[in-house]
Amino acid sequence: MRQREDQEFAIALNNMSEGNMTHADIQLIKSRKKTSNEIPNEAIHLFYSNAGANNFNSIKLANTVTDEFISTAKDTIKSSSLTERSRENILEAVKGFKPSETQGMPHTLQLKTSIKYMVTVNISTSDGLVNGATGELMQVDTVSSGSESSGATMDEIRRTKSWKLCTFQAAA
Image (cartoon, rainbow, N blue to C red; front, side):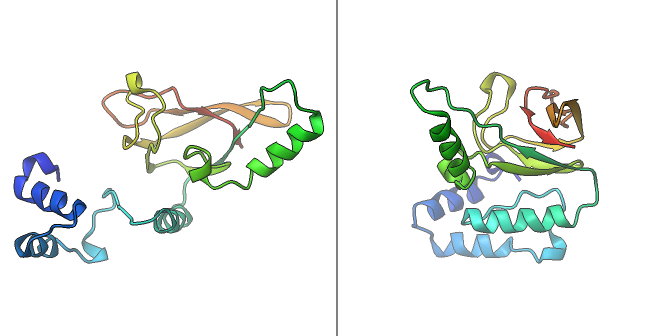
């Protein structure tokens, strides 16, 4: 449902965000409550915290039997003033950072085909890869180079246009 198509609901949501809900707003929200069996599979779920979202996503991934890929960040340090040991220590420490400490980018990301994903950071506004954009991962192409697989692309995502920009490291 789009808020612009339902002005009453849009006002109730705005009032909720401001902490000023009326009795009518509360009744409207309660009237739209669904049991878990009534929620369509394609529905986007919103959570109060990242922990709630991460838990839901982990359960969805565990219950989805499709091809799985693990995308691992390949972090680098551009400063030439650091020793090799300092670089290694920093890169090792970064692996333990929460996504909230790395501009929303986790060190490892579990991906499965046929699952709908949401972009949580602006990647490329010209390509529509913006915070909140959604698409379904249809295929991951990997190109092996030595001990790493790299150059995987999110391809054929069901949207008005095909996204081929998101490249990442993937362990096949």
